[in-house]
Amino acid sequence: MGWHDSLAARAFVMGKSAVEFKRGAQRIATATGGLLMIAAGVWYFTSWTWALIPAALAAFAGLQSVSATLVAARLEKLEQQLPRDPQNQPVSR
Image (cartoon, rainbow, N blue to C red):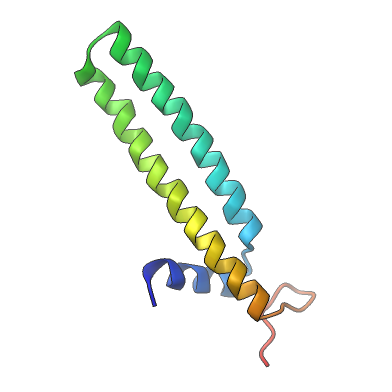
């Protein structure tokens, strides 16, 4: 079991859904684009060394977005395999 699998299993037990992770991944991806535009502007108006700060933040945000997308995919598989009851708790078979 990989790291993203264990994160998805923990999120499933906590009652989180794949939709929440997809929304979070999209929000972080949008922030990544904004940070890349800021890095380009800083590089254009100052120097590339100052542009490394927003570029590093963009790289970190991009990794978070990819990770959230991977957890969402694994969480979708779990949701298909194990149904939930009305209180959003996993139902054991």
